[in-house]
View 1 (cartoon, rainbow, N blue to C red):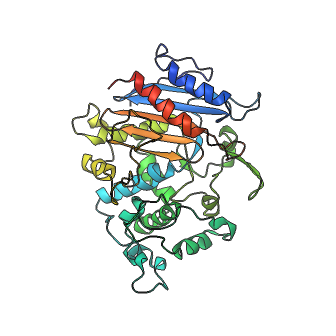
View 2: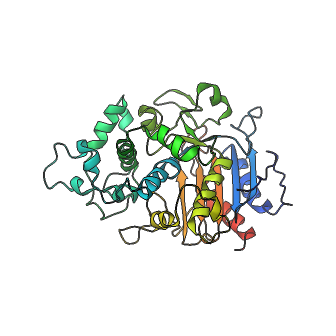
View 3: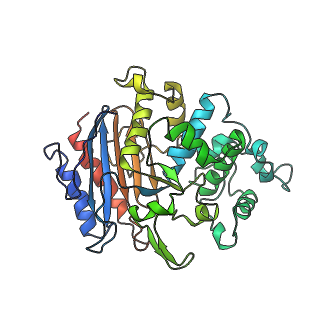
Amino acid sequence: MDSEATSSAAGTHPDGGRFATACRVLQDAIRGGAFPGCAFGVLADGEAALQDALGRFTYEGDSPAVSAGTVFDVASLTKVVATSAAAMLLEQRGRLELDLPVAELLPAFVAGRAAGDPARRVTLRHLLAHSSGLPGYVEFFRTAATPDAVLEACFQLPLEAEPGARAEYSDPGFILLGKAIEVLVNESLSTWTAREIFMPLGLGSTLFCPPASARAAIPPTEIDESFRRRIIQGEVQDENAFVLGGAAGHAGLFSSVPDLLRFADEILSAASPNHRNAKRARLFAPATIELFAARQDPRGSSRALGWDTPSRNSSSGRRFSRHSIGHLGYSGCSLWIDLDAAVTVVLLTNRTWPRRESGKIREVRPAFHDAVREVLQF
């Protein structure tokens, strides 16, 4: 990725105001209480067209201002930037078979189940495509106090549908996927992804479990009044990931706009050998991007392998092509990559501050993406 365009939290822009309408969407969102602050960036045809920030860590007037490089808890962006990226690289290297039954790597997933239990037919592909039949979300942390206890409870979950019969976004599925990858590489997901993905791509701000010394520089996500009973800042907001030690297949990653644009640049550079920046691709091959960006069964699902794709009323708005991949994070983060137009948009917020009930981000995301893409007419 070429030299970064940066500007101040006050909202001045080095591109002559091309993105003024998009920034106004975010300014209005802050005034409307959708989130106290945000960092955002745009990558267009290999160039960082915009990196900027607005607002503060909290709604207090003396709270630190968000900068373009502020590190956020990116929540479920973990699923693509860490877990799915690891699956992509391992599949490319011939170490991961998409149609391998999960039980081959995690025998405890079928221990005690009947011979005909559909869990025996769940594959890694099903986990990536969110079509395993596992439930969408389970509050393991309410009764499980250790990582082993969370995993044991996850292993014992009954399926709610036949594998491949329905698509339901599943956190337990990605908890299992993260663990399966750890078995494959004989190493923790956090250390493997740091060495094999984040370091080679120069993602210096992307990590699990930030040290205590770095936490004050990360916007807080929530005043937790029911579980940890403290302000959550610089540690994973997701309670299941917290009990799992802060690093899991479904959540736990922290990152920044510059890092996520660099990650997207790798995806775009690898997507086509004819791309202007194809020579910059360091990790992934074009066939890998094509494989993992393809929509999966069941028919009608927007899910690719790990990634989502645009659908009706998508958070990506109306202007990302069907050949786009992206993901959301519960904390208020999003990453969308248009593989046809070579455009990426990153938005990082802490929309769950001080409490997670607000859903105003649902209107902000498509409006922001549409305003950005209106400027980039290609």
